Image (cartoon, rainbow, N blue to C red; front, side, top):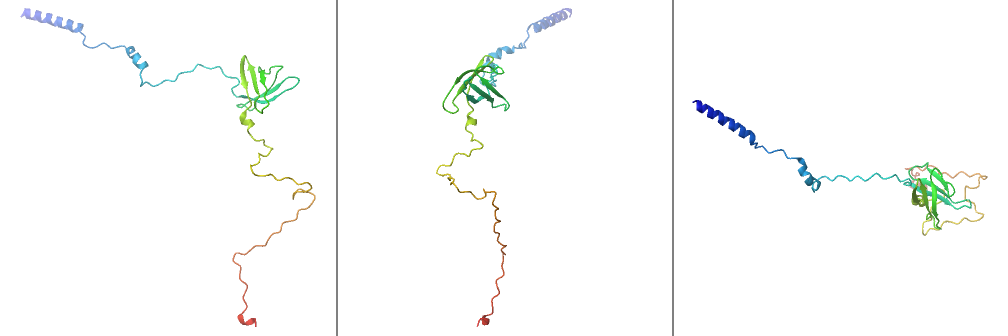
Length: 193
């Protein structure tokens, strides 16, 4: 019996050693092995590509408000469509607040003159604001409708109400009209004879 217990203990010892050596559970795999599949998956959520930060454009909202030729030098007024208070009066002689005129391309057509300005080494070509050019003038009447001839003023003829020295008569006012007037009484038939 003693031999049996020795054999049993040796068998138990060998069994525990073999069980520890044979680990049947798989090892946890590294997630990096799926990286190639994630990068090229057609089902992945597309992430927006971040554009590099662009340098701010100094002439983004600027336009030419006025341009004039002068014997002392050309003059240009630039304004901003974003800021109402922004106006710079530039000349070809001296820069103003860092803004300078680099070139002016004059045109005989209204609104076609182009002005190239510079600021801090950056250049931009400005034109007239076409939205402002197409607006009708506030004090002038709009263009006449086609087919309608405006009346010509006659010399020596004054329109009514234009002479302040003459008193204007009061207009005639009618009396009130009854809705259901009473008919005049009819005389008896025998009274006429």
